[in-house]
Image (cartoon, rainbow, N blue to C red; front, top):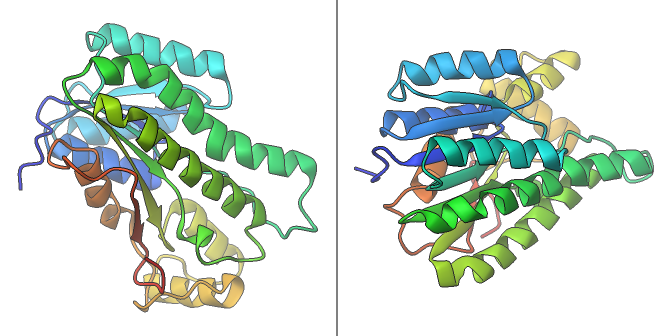
Length: 265
């Protein structure tokens, strides 16, 4: 299926690794121009090398901390100059890393979860809006999490931030409908990201085995899925790429679960 992404201008915030990089690879393979934005120059350089080899020879790696509004504004202003002020797709794949129960989390940890998990997205969309509006067609895809529907006591701040992001995204889909800018959310389930694999190894589990990883997740977080294994980042990328594409022409305000099967719709 041709997603209509050839030469599209796309930006993936949090594209230096994990599901963000997997998404950026899909966009590159479809012929899009891709900018990956993140905090780590070394991670971005590695990502750009991959993207250059799979369809986006002019891929960009741009350093910015989404918790700093001035840095976000600077990056999107630079993108506007490079791409004639147009942006077809913005993907926000940054997530808060706070793990802990309600009673254990400090005020600072709650604030950090909201800063990384919600305000980063708000700043990026706000900075990108002029370019999204100028483009012939435009999409926004934000990463939420299936834990907003299937709670875990150890993910209180993370889940709270993701739930807020989902609500704000729904509001954006309403606001931007008049501009025909489609805004959707993807809620990944238990995905074998570097951070999750690292956590598994810290509790004595081989995180590289998606079946053992899912067993550990079920034991520690209570997040089993219908499928008996954890998902892989490359299984998220194609879903996001479709939502971010011209081929998606009428889906907006949706929350798409990619979680290996759950009891939620």
